[in-house]
Image 1: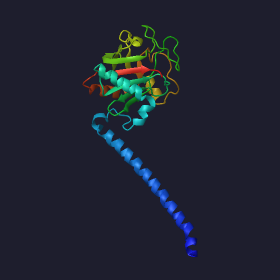
Image 2: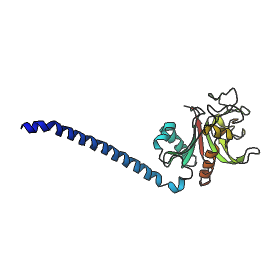
Image 3: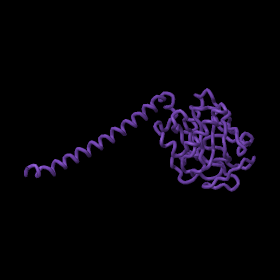
Image 4: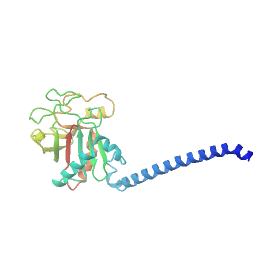
Length: 239
């Protein structure tokens, strides 16, 4: 009996250690199972999206930037208006221009396919940290609301294709007349690559267009060209 009481504390310690390692192992197994399911889901579309996907398992990341309510409303809008229901573009102007705020969102996987910095218009006393929004012709401002990609356009003598946008709301109804586009510009590249730091400055970078990086534009072009329904929705908003 005396020996039993002598070994009891050691037995208790050993059982505690074993219990601890069982808990850790179970947590790892559960985490591994979740990640495996996630990556299998992403892998099912690997061949289709590997060229354009930046974050193939970014389910949670997508909803850091875009609310589920906005996604649901946008998806229903696309269905009602016979627009592409595979992906769309969100531009969140509540996010500062030194952070990604141009997002291509996959309805199928609920993930971000592309993300980029995006400059805003320089008109009506807009500042790098505070855009002024206007639909007026000649304002050089960004406009909020829903847009539809309606094809390609060359910007003056610009050597690359840009995406032409049609405004679908009262707040951006002059988009075609104002030649509002999605296009890349080298200045945004420099800020994306951290060669330049801080907020994207005002100026020729954007006169109201959605100015993104060349890398993001190239990926968007590849994605767009694969679509049968090329009527893509872009939604620019603030929170």
